[in-house]
Image 1: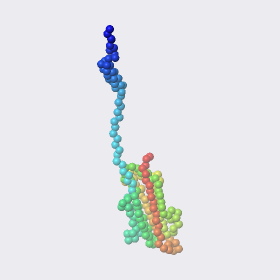
Image 2 (image 1 turned 180 degrees about the vertical axis):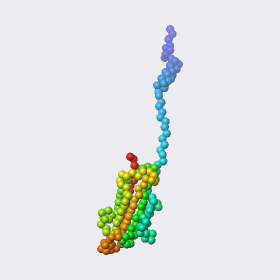
Image 3 (image 1 turned 120 degrees about the vertical axis):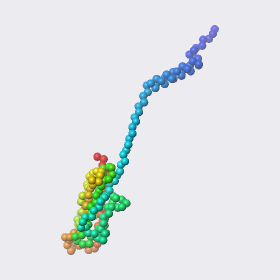
Image 4 (image 1 turned 180 degrees about the horizontal axis):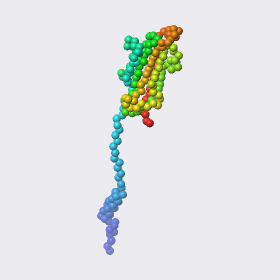
Amino acid sequence: MREKKNILLNKKFLIPVFLLLLVGVSLGYSALQTTLQINGNTKISKTEWIVHFSNIQVTEGSYLNSGNNTAVIDANDDTKVTYTVTLNAPGDFYEFTVDIVNEGTLPAKLDAIRETGLTPAQIAEIPYLDYSVTGMPSVGDVLNVGAANKNTVTIRVEYPLDITAQELPGSDYTFTKTIELDYVQNRS
């Protein structure tokens, strides 16, 4: 008797059937697969942080002592103003204004004011010195972008005219004061 060959166990038959099943499953999977795409472009514009001092103007009538009484914006750092004043006699004064401007692209907010040197109370006790700063912004004030949005600060140092002989200083007196304004980006 002849043996019957099982056609399902024949290697020649199994390999093509297996390949057909594999191709069928692959096609079925790809038919159920979905590809999602998100395409986009983002551009971040150039931004600049340029908050600085500008435009120092000495008030008319200020005592000018052979050019020594000058307020200047630091040539290397326009965030610093320096002045040295020598007043020789009662009635002499030196006054100047300086602008705080924001020429950048981000609005700025005054975050802190730091002062070194004598306090306002200590200055008030010196009879031969009147010192004042006006127009100073307050913490939290916003300085918007543009030269038109500026803060003009006036600093005045004066040797009072109405001083008595007993109040005159017995020797030269040097007064040093530093005010620092810390600006940050206004995020509101």
